[in-house]
Each structure stands twice: as structure tokens, then as C-alpha cells.
Length: 321
Image 1 (cartoon, helix red, strand yellow):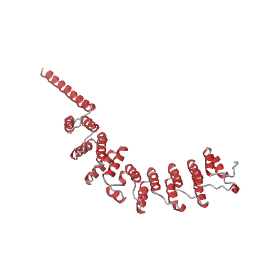
Image 2: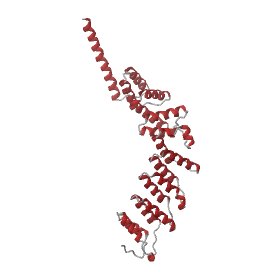
Image 3: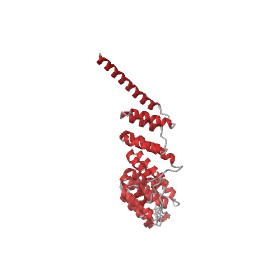
């Protein structure tokens, strides 16, 4: 089908393969390059790896795995990236156990998985909601001496925020996660990102009760997340929101303008106007100036009260007559 020159190189083969969009024709190009060994050509790691990636993209996983096995027979180095491309492919089509199977076969190809490999598999397991398996996998990672990285912690935090019952402070210790203010901040932010504000508040309470305080580097993040949790609670858990607000003040955490606005609207909606006024007075004394929306709510509520009061007085006068 193809006429190859005697000085054919892997780069030439890959160039021709890249130009071929049809996967079946692509396979023909790949096979024809070595159809006649008279030209002395053998595929190298680059052409093999490219072919594997194209097969994975076309969901031809068995063909991709067979090609990797052929690489070993032909004494071609099998890289971690090549095997991870198959793992990601299986993850994309929701076959996490096949991803795990290929991962565990890495040593058969004299390939030791790195942090990158472990994080890739953790992400696949979490994405497919295999949370127990993900924590078991992470525990195995710790047992073989691989320390946690920012990437692996972020993947596990994503798992926590999907199912808050899977972990608490004690469990985090068992999993090798140091529950400091930075980690709590990421967990709390993760819950806020998926609008689980009650769960975020629970972890914030756990952090406070555990005596874990933010340092100079994490203080601003703590202030931001605390305010975000209060605003999120206002919609469905107003009492909890106000309790957390009081806790913030007692710990010297400044209240943001948006948070004040949410609390005032929440209190006025509940008919607790005097409490809202007191709240504004406290915050203004701390140096936080309410925005126009907050003043509008208070003034509007005051006008409503005045109108009702005037109407009541008029009705009483009429009754006396």
C-alpha cells in the first residue's frame, strides 16, 4: 500500500501517521513501515507511543495494550506516560478498574510509577466516585514511602467534598494528611465551591474546637473562607450564620461588606429589624462601611414601619370618633 524509502526514519513515519485521520488507515501506515525488514526499519519509542495514543483516542484499548506488549518483545522502552495514556483512556469511558489494572502492570514493563502516576490514578478513582478505593490507593502510596504532594492532597480534598462522611480530623491523620489550618482551608473552600455550606461550617467548627489557628500566611484565606461560609448559610441556615458571625467577631476576623449585606437582608426577612440595626452599628464601629444595598434595605424597612405606624394611629383616631 505504501512505498517506503530505504532510509526511512521514525519521524517520517510519525509525520505520515499524523496526516492520517482514519484510524484503520493509520494502522495500515504503521504496519506497512515494518512489513519488509529488508529496509532495516523498526519502530522506536516515539512511533509506538504515538500509535498507542491514537488507538486510545479511538477507544481501541485492547489494540493499544497489545501494542505495548509488542514494545516489550521488541526491547523498546515503555514509558510511564504511554501507560498512563491508556489509564486515562479507560477513565474517560468510566472503566476505573481497568485503569487500575493497567497501572499495576507498570512493573511488568520495568516502569516504576511516579507521583504523577499515583495522582493520575487518584484523580480517576475520585472522578468515578470510587472514594474508598481512592483512600486505600493513597494509603498504599504512603506505605511505600511516597510523601503527599499538593496535587495528591487536592485530589483527596475533592473526594472529601463529594462525600463529607468519608473523613474527619482523626481519619485525616490516619490517611497521612496533617490537618493544619491550610488543609482545613482547602477543605472548607472545596465545600463552598459545591455549595455545601453546612458541611463547610462543620469543618470550620472542627478546626476551631481543635485549637487549630491560621498563621500569618493562611490568615487572609481563613478570613475569606469564613465570610464565604456565613454568606452561604444565610439562605438556608440563618441561625447558624449568625452564630458563626459572632464566632468570627470573637476571634478578631473582619466581616466583609458582602457578608454584612447578607446578614442584614437575612435578619430583615425574618422580621428581626432591631437586630439588623444593632448588627450594622457593631460592624460600622469596627470600620466596615455598609454598601448602598444594605442601607436601602434598612431605610425601606424603616419606611414600612413608619407607614404602618401612621396608619394605626389614624385608625385609632377614627375609632375614638
